[in-house]
Amino acid sequence: MDVKLLLPLAAALAVLTYAPPSEAKPISLVERCHCRVTVNNIPKGYIRELRFIQTPSCPFQVIAKLRTNKEVCLNPEIKWLQQYIRNAMNKMRKSKRGK
Image (cartoon, rainbow, N blue to C red):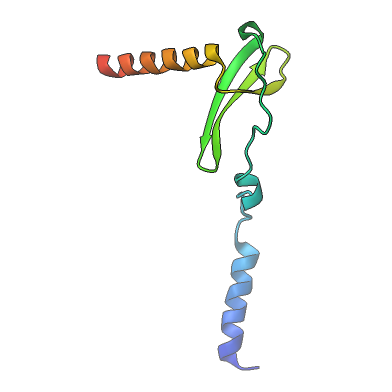
């Protein structure tokens, strides 16, 4: 075999052998929306925690962790949730102005 051909092959094998494994998710998992179905009738008292997710490929998503540790997706159009978001945004604006 020619040395000029063997050297790049050996270098490629060395890189593949010693390169750390990738932690990246496949594109199909990255672009998948977390919330496929939303719930409209969860009382505020059942919710322990709210998470908000905004990604380029999915609409605004609200995930509620209930007292039972179950996670459900809330419809972002629920009136009390809209008011909660408005109050949180106003609070953030006021705290930024005060600094």
